[in-house]
Length: 85
Length: 395
Image (cartoon, rainbow over all chains, first blue to last red; front, side):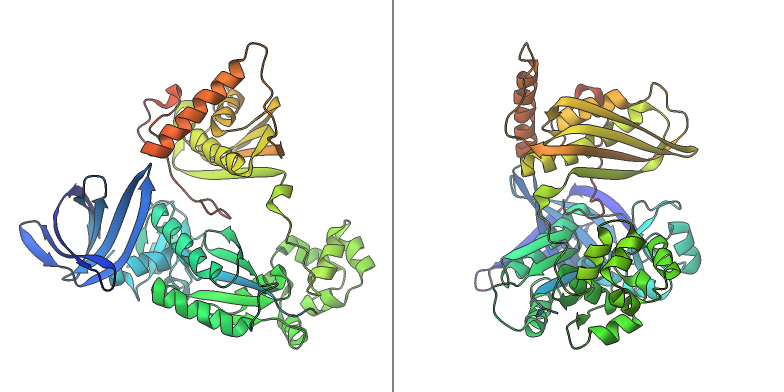
């Protein structure tokens, strides 16, 4: 079941300069901390000249789709799913 | 048959596999990406697990749910698919500079002038895709001496296949291959061939040029004769295309002209962007509507040619009927008589050049701030312009 959220969210991010990799490690949503276990896909696209990063992550059996707006560095939680119908 | 220098790369269950790649919770589960989640929505891609149950492209969501009640149905995420498409292309151009995207999930790679064994190259490509994009995304690779044989080979083993059709094995393959499995042979053509005594691909190969010419009643017979012998007949340059078309199936059937305008606008922009990229112009436009009670179409001509989506939109809406008699299910914009846009014919009072200048500026603003920032006045009340990837398209 997928639920569209589309609201601002707090995210802790990690940047590893050795691997040149960037990934969210913790999300604060619904008065709870969700530790990111897997990043399924990190993709980006341009909305006009604004670059938007999308992180599809798994935490505690839940799927989160996070958006990072590179213009203001704000995070949004786009959707949440539990992997069922 | 010449040595194999053509490769065809086909992503298995493309949209569904990408969804499973991005959401690992869906891996191993039946997943379908449908144009719409509603019962009447048509499935565009089914995951391997869903395919095993008999659910495939073209199945309705309602039918799929009857077969498998716990199938996960998702709507397309076009930006995600375009991103993976670009990543795949990045991988392929490392092996050969001649990569042609045939659609969002298919690539034709020409290895003429590039040294190396294609089987080992294909294995390296598979490994690199698994490492860089993700092991869940698999590709079927076909190798042959022309694009047709490479494509045929890629269809022979799915998922994660690797097949070469060459001078050593083509006889065995042709003897087992049904005519209908050949790319470009539909059931009607297969029937026509069978009536002439051609039962399978091997018979097709053995048929003389004269016989094939008489069956197809055109030069196509000759093309098939050479295609089956590994001669390149499909490597025509993009510039030789004489028309472009864009199709959109509506989520909710439209009953009025107002509901159709955003769709016509988006289809016109897509056609116009292609014209801009190819530096061409079109002098003909046709609008085709598929209704619940039949179909309707109208063709228009513009002497001076159309150079961008705004001009196509302006002409296309002129073609709309006064009243739509029925409910529209699908809209097609077809532009034809394409020519190089070497110069632009202005009208007597310079209105056209002003319009083109204005729309160029609008395109620049849309490129900077995102599609839909500036839209025609007729669409001001429409809140959403649809985004989609058409069959055989990459954008």
